[in-house]
Length: 123
Image 1: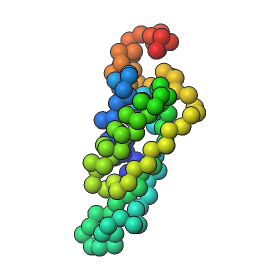
Image 2: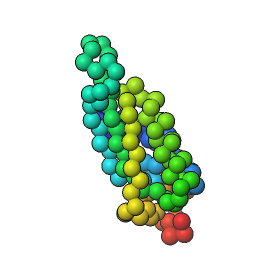
Image 3: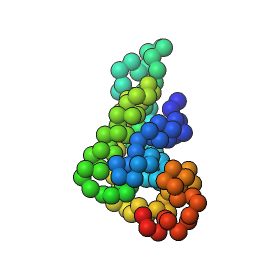
């Protein structure tokens, strides 16, 4: 069974086009839903790995068409590389709006913000 942790680990390879930090550590991922793909080829055949439908809801740092297209493509392409993923659906949410407060401690380190908390205000 595909897990949320495996999906999050894969999504750490998908980067925001402007901030150059991954979508997980920027706090862009709002939800992940994983369900069995009952219509996938080979379903029910012994020895054939079960495929899943992965639904990702996220917010963007910069809600533009270019950012949306690039982020969506990265996520779909990266998850297609997981054997257990058959289909990926990406939903871009309008709310909540992203702020630097969403960045994880690891993301703050990647962006060089961990040593100076005041820098988060200028992003």
